[in-house]
Length: 223
Image (cartoon, rainbow, N blue to C red; front, side):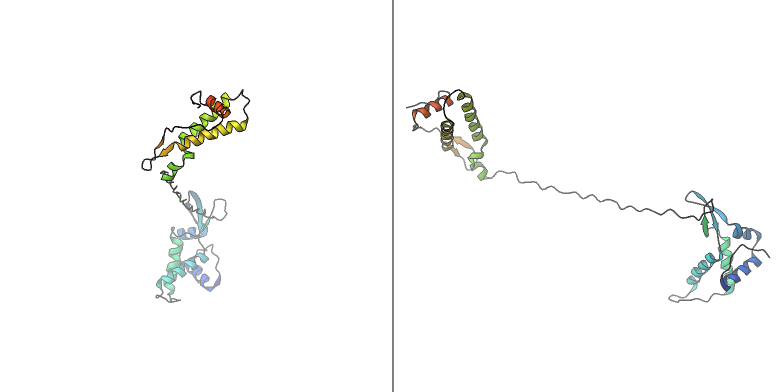
């Protein structure tokens, strides 16, 4: 009788061990006592089987024979002993795995990554179409702004050396602005701004006329 390096716990495992020692071949006894070498995850590992592992295997096989919905199954001894030979003989059935240094092998945990989903944000386009009220707002008209800037620039340049007061300068500039606005009309259909020639009668005093005369480069007729 061949002695096997197996530890039996309980009556069932003892019966399996006794059967194996009386029936295994020398090559199968070598596998049971020393294990077999396998390669897994590019590592050389030692697979060793024991009676505890066989009892789990036999339990799964018995479930396959049990009637559907049954909690138990009656299996003949000869079938169980056949399972024992198959379990220790079949190399594809893994036992407990050990590294080359003798430590128990632990499989590398699989890391699952969740794919990132890019969320595209749609940018709302603002309605840039001009309305009729935009054309009617003469104070925001680019042409009017340009004319106001020219008048202010002339005042700063030509009145630099004069003794006129700031209030007089502003009064003349404001009067010119009002006259320019009053002479402007807007076409409701096209939005076009036109300037009408109006026969102006100056009601300002001579001092103001003098200032305005210099601002307009001598083009103002004083009556």
